[in-house]
Length: 317
Ligand code: NAP
Ligand code: 8YV
Image 1 (spheres, protein in one colour):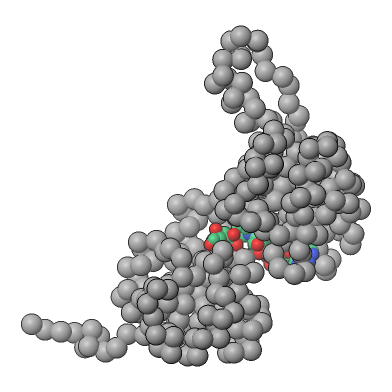
Image 2 (cartoon, rainbow, N blue to C red):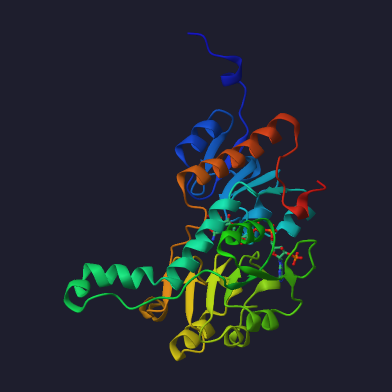
């Protein structure tokens, strides 16, 4: 029997956190010995593959003394302390750009579903009400709306582009003004007051924690629609439920939640919401592109010590 030299050479040790696709598994197994969380030797692990939800907790990061790279499946990396990783010389990578269009489509899907009452009208037909009562009640047009985008980065700009055919007027709030042909607001409440729809697409983490608070939602108002495709932490969920119940806020289309996958019964019971189970990037095509980039980052690091898409905190490593 001929055993290849590569098989005899010891492969580096990769810790897998969370699920990965079959394609990712095949490509990674050809280059790494893959370990699961229930059985691994911390000193041996040089690379980690994880996702945006699980990240890497601080105790685990501290225990992996020879860790070089954390490769994350997702663009948001709020579940990893990237500053601490950089301090330890660990490169964190993520999957920017390959999911921009998909997440933007999800934001628009939620906006359209709220405006055109897709869930209500689907139920109107299925329940037999159409036949029994006649035509369904009218809905609101999603054309010609003023849309405020909270976070005009890669995905925020894709959302603005996709809104152009609907003749939307685009406002935005970020910490720094961008060189873009949209109206900048340095105050989120003031922007909420001036728009029909507020779309949240910032990162999660301390700087955005509950920045969409009761005041912002009241400013958006009874005819206003809140869309959140960023992180559940960005919106004060209790305040949102109160505002939606009392009518101070009109509608909410949500892909992300504070305690996901747990979603409060109060929110599920509200008729003026459209709720999705964090599927912003969840198509086969986009998840394949994300998975490929996750693996490419790890393989490039084995080859020459660099990565393709480090998070900004680790770009200089
Ligand atoms: P990005 O290019 O880094 O854009 C982030 C934008 O948010 C920037 O314009 C940034 O501008 C702004 N921002 C950051 N902190 C802010 C703050 N405290 N207040 C106001 N604006 C702030 O990121 P991206 O690729 O567009 O992704 C954005 C986020 O979307 C991800 O981090 C993730 O949480 C979420 N996401 C969700 C899904 C999903 O499945 N639902 C999928 C992908 C991504 P300034 O720095 O000037 O403030
Ligand atoms: C992922 C996301 O589904 O990219 C992100 O930030 O939220 C989604 O694309 C999530 O990270 C799970 O890995």
